[in-house]
Image (cartoon, rainbow, N blue to C red):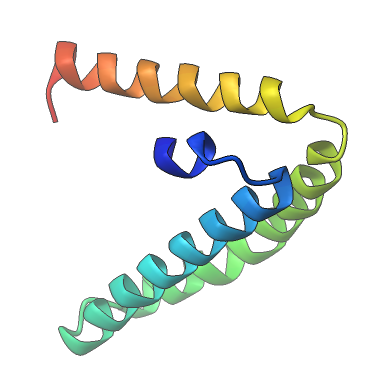
Amino acid sequence: MAYIYDRPWTKDEQVATLNGVFIASGLVRFGMLVVHGHLHVETWISAAWAVTPMLAAILCGTWLLKFIPQQRLRTGVYLSLLAIGGRYLVLGA
């Protein structure tokens, strides 16, 4: 993620690249869960309940992204990655 935000791309190019990475990795994980039979009825029910809030979050995030300057977005991403890394250093995996 830091690599993508460090490229001299536009904000739209960075977000589109990250979307592609997340979708691809999600599809691989989903395929592995299906192949190994780890998706039970309860999982599908939970996923169905999550669709509406997920779509609302995507729409709100897309709308808010229009108002965030690229440099401020980059700083926020770096601070988030720093916090996540610090958490792993202190608490472990």
